[in-house]
Length: 427
Image (cartoon, rainbow, N blue to C red; front, side):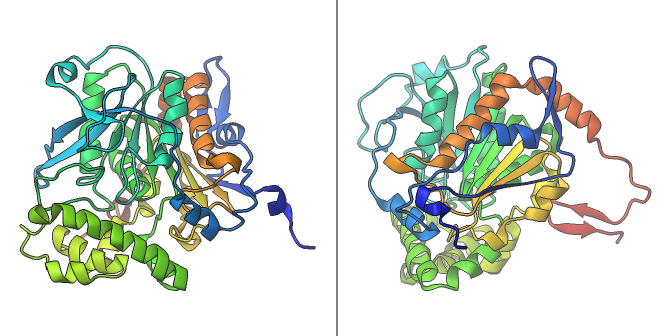
């Protein structure tokens, strides 16, 4: 019998997790597993039946949608990284309207020095740190659909814009790459110092999801985020690249569109980017597909011998096993950009701190419902709200760390280094 549930908009949802997920302690003193909490918080996936496959869902993102009107105040930070100097822009959700700045995205203005100098607070409002997708920014509708319902109930939020994105300037020859964790690391440290009592949460979308996964893994048990959610993570960039190039739509629509988007960014910032003598302007201009951009810009910018080396280094799949905070991944199995074959199901089974929610339908950062809302935005906000409202996060973190502390191995080697994807052996 044919499955006609899509006619009613019913997508199938599945969960993948460790056999014994971490236990979270509620504010009433009871306990609930991370996987059970996720399944309680996340609503059934009901989508627009007219957008009945991943391609239609994904392409619908091109339809103009005003989205919720979020206002931002921008602050430019100077990087404190030893190698990757320069600057990057962070947009903080503002609680009042202000005149638009023609040099910035809609509803965004700069903080005045006087206003920014008094931003520090002892309040305990939960705060969301957002990382957008490739060439995106704080203005993206998919991001604002997550931010809006949380800030409406008292959360604070900020968006770390990738260098050069969201009409930000760059002062170095680097824009961004898929494992550039240094800017978000700097901001999380700054937030912890500036707002010492705020519980911090993180959400990443597509490329930003890959970066956030790697960041959380690199921080391990010292991570200052209480929890993180990643949406439409491409996970294994090399596998996703090959899957993208196997089909006409993948190559000629998605890959070419992403290539064109980066070429526009390059054109805006080429004076700075071309200070790197290893980048050939004519090759960048002649590129048709995303992999060519990665070959002609990303590889020479960051010192990789090829785009394949960049993809392998930036892949976040292995990093999953190093994560030590509650972590939720959300993917659609028909996503034409973040391929299903790249989803690390087995790695999710190995880490009790992680849960994967997959739907069989939804596309890339899409999951459109009737009226233009996106199911994943509701899933993300419900998950965060349940953690913040129902769970004693401090007690839960201590309990999880105690129950899942690493047992000293009987032998020193071999040791798997998850954030560097290498088996470490004696030399």
